[in-house]
Length: 345
Image 1 (cartoon, rainbow, N blue to C red):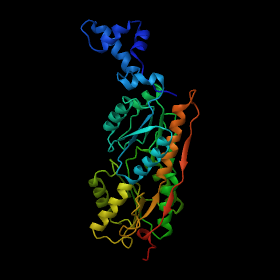
Image 2 (image 1 turned 45 degrees about the vertical axis):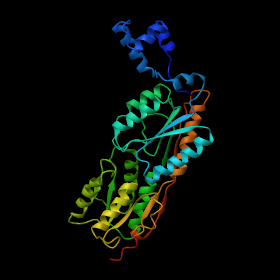
Image 3 (image 1 turned 60 degrees about the vertical axis):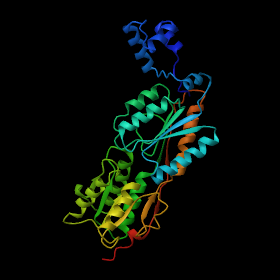
Image 4 (image 1 turned 90 degrees about the vertical axis):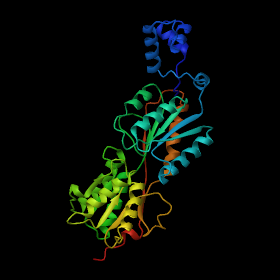
């Protein structure tokens, strides 16, 4: 399955023009009428014309490069995913080009545009927290670009996807807090538009429902940028601590939100777990060394990267169009430590 840019000759054939005319129109030559220039340029943009040497070489095969889009590489989870991606890609003779969105939709679009103009053979992407409109990805998919989503996915494009069992992760974390004696369990999470937020929240709700507990909306806090802005987490935490009935436990749902919440609770000199227990998602190898050691849901980042890459390579190297797609769900692991010790009072 190839995502190959069209050539000047292809444009000329489609528009019934000479190659020379198309070439001059793309160079904005004075010799060509404005109407013809407009016709050529619009066709070129719509059909993914990329005027660079690498794109021309693609007519003979693949560029042997895949693009990666993640939020930030300093996130331990995404670092592990990238390691998994590289382990498969390099073995298959493919290079990887890594870009970061920093949770910005605008930067995500720019990164993908840059990658496609670098003549990638396929794209691995985890959507940013700001992303709500994926029309730009739909267009690339229609044009033939192999795309595999991982972690933060969308149901709007039929392709392979790889996720962790977010529902079970949310359920297990909340169930553990309940079993440890905590009842008022608050939830600090990413914005509600992304897939992982919905799935983890559903698991949280299910565990509470089974225990006959209903938490009011005031105990649910969304961080618009996934906690990238520490102020978001501070505001969420301050709101929770100002409630008449303060939470006795907090379940957080991302690496950044989890570790920052722990830091802020320590700064406020709130004893964990005596005053408030804390459990969250984190892949940091330092969870045991934190104060207190942090109970967490661990995601198989390395394995996710490996699986997503193998699925993408299968699309890239397929001899015929692929119509059967799979969503792979990898298991999460709950690791309990001191931050959720049994409630004593």
